[in-house]
Image: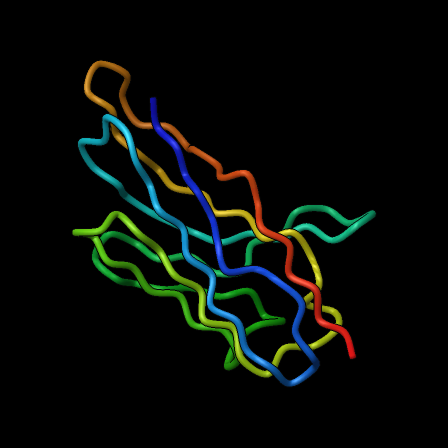
Length: 120
């Protein structure tokens, strides 16, 4: 059984910062790409940031220069540092990881999501 658990969401004022964490656990042999996605009410889920196992990163246009993704492979954890938050960043943030499980191959796993609300 593989699980991804996000944490770090909450309520923050515009211009503030939050740091999200995503911890993977279970019968994991290898984690490839990890990423953060978000979904606002009535909107489609969108990619926020991604990071390869080697540390190569990519970002959605709306968060470039404000958000930073990182990972600690030893801890099986990905992070999303969010600065200069705007009300339009309000959404449920989900972690996704490509995980290889012995005997099951590689597939995408998703966390349960963490709410981020940016409001004064």
